[in-house]
Length: 497
Image 1 (tube, rainbow, N blue to C red):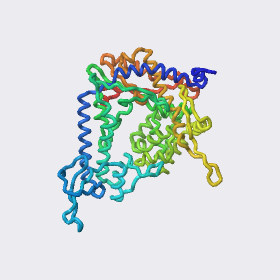
Image 2 (spheres, helix red, strand yellow):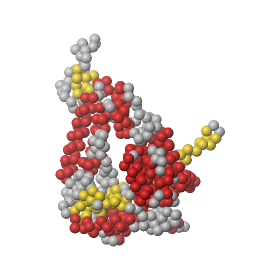
Image 3 (tube, rainbow, N blue to C red):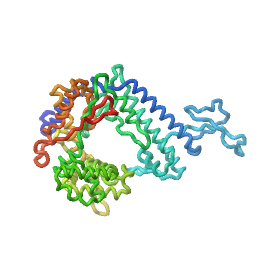
Image 4 (cartoon, one colour):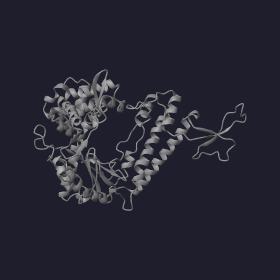
């Protein structure tokens, strides 16, 4: 009977286990020991600011919500303590024939729970949003933001302020308190689904990224806490359009790969606005095509960023029109419009469309997929097959999106891990203080006197052609992805170098 290593090798998954678990684990342990720099002073300021904003939004909500939407408990006698507290505020209600003196009641403070928000929406006669899959009432962030834009009701704005502050305070700030050494020491582990690295206490891969100008955001406030210590600088090396390029690689689609390297979002936008030259652009030299895509980006930014970007992202993850529309209602007027955008992608890139169809069928037939980096993922329901009116009907199942997304995602995350291993062989991870990896990037807290040395070594290693992602059609010498480099004294103010 074969042993475990023989079974792993025979199934093509030993490499992933040997390199990305056994070899990488001690490197991750040392990265955890180095820690991620957080300024104690900036941490205290951020915590106080966000807590103050949360309290202010909470008070504003109490003023905006009518009494009929709040929980009221009648009291038998006049209470001694009428001031607001955890149980609410005491008020005297209007007199009634039964209680001519007006009864006392305790009004509980209103909270933006699902129940409380639905009650308010019905009171204001606003449409109650429904969950895309379950058709149940939902009050998630996207839906509340849409309601605010549609109704301009100030309560929804305050709910968004409150929830954002609460999320950052409880999910992020709480776990980012620095130790006596001015560092947080996260524990890194593996996401078995895609191969992406994760972390806990704190989750340094999940820091707030973007501010929301419409409702006030905390990304800049939060990231300003992450400050390089004296004599150091933060350096972030970020792969450009990595997942779009690995999708093109798996699909063996030279056109998709070329545009992923140039600007695939502007290319799709050109088709969406029916720009007359779009259908000819692929025949142009790179320099001419690049200038054309820059022109599209400059003059049609709304279509590019609002429609093309979410569509390209969703396309790589196997997203259907319903879900694309549901998650981007501010960009698409209807599910039909979202479908037209995806159909445009299918038409523009028939090779990639064929890969998406074929890989789903393969995952359905086998029940699993194995990546080039040696990762195995099982799929239970790629297609949902049912008999309808005497005919067998096949629809995308719960694992349909995951089947399309798995190989391109694992290609990217596997390459990042291989690069970390290469840098370990060069003995530079400790020298340049490798402290984090976030999605498609590596982060260093580099000594100032080593920055000029660090940048070319790390960048060149990351851009080196892959030894695994080799294909005679799109990458005969190995897939190579460009890397952007940014630097700064804190994580909120990095600038490209």
